[in-house]
Image (cartoon, rainbow, N blue to C red; front, side, top):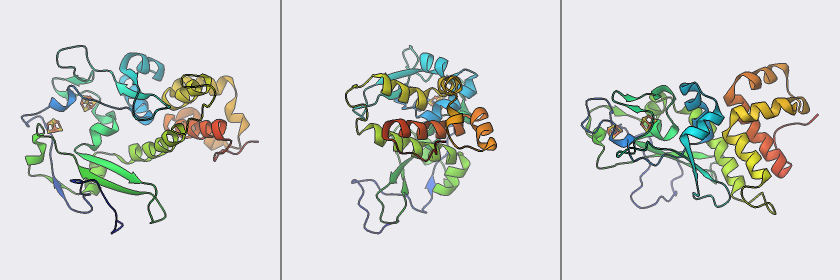
Amino acid sequence: MSKDKQFPEGMIPLGKDPFSFSCHPGVPCFTICCKKVDLVLFPYDIIRLKKSLGMDSQQFLTEHVNLVKGDNPFFPTVMLKLGDNDEHSCPFLTEEGCSVYDDRPSACRTYPLERAVDRTSSMGRPEEFYFVAKHDYCKGHFEDTQFTVKQWVRNQRIDDFNMMNDLWAEMDTLFRTNPWKGEGSGGPKQQMAFMACYDIDGFREYAGSQQLLKRFRLTKDQKKRLVQDDMELLKFSFEWVKLFLTGRSSLVQK
Ligand code: SF4
Ligand code: SF4
């Protein structure tokens, strides 16, 4: 960690220090945090959730998502649609707890930690920091079990989410530059970029109909993985969006 790094007041990165936390059906606040929750969904969250629910990405977007104006002025923010009940609970919450636990979104699995990535780090590579997010209603902080960040990331299986969310952060940064100039938000380019990022099954269909994979130098093995694996296809779709918006990408055209 850079010694001279400045953080907002009250935010102290954890480093290697352990923190106390445990969440289980015995805590008095069990499932309280799954109600009235503002949950932003990232592209990889949707891949995992739609798989868990046995639906395709188009169906997931229709049933479970609201598009709102967030902090990116040139791209919508994707939020989980909450239940239309008094508690405004997450639609995946049951009396026993989370029904999509193995595939729950990044924010749910990272909590009580929050992750920040410094891409301008003097270390020559992005540096990540974790902070403990404390809410008065959360009694998990008073449990005896202790974790280091490393143990928590392993325990909650956050690695794939972090990797994919870092790739998404690059896309989000690109979208903040208003790459749809002339078309405005909601124009054909933005709609295409939205599909490629959030509707992986729609993008697979599009890629098939346009024979997209044939246009790039890809090994047989790479093509096979792209056809079968949503995560691999999402990495490809990010690079494809970069290419059509900026002319630059890691994809090599034939
Ligand atoms: S996905 Fe699961 S953990 Fe996250 S808010 Fe919904 S029920 Fe709670
Ligand atoms: S409020 Fe904290 S301890 Fe309670 S259920 Fe949510 S994460 Fe677990």
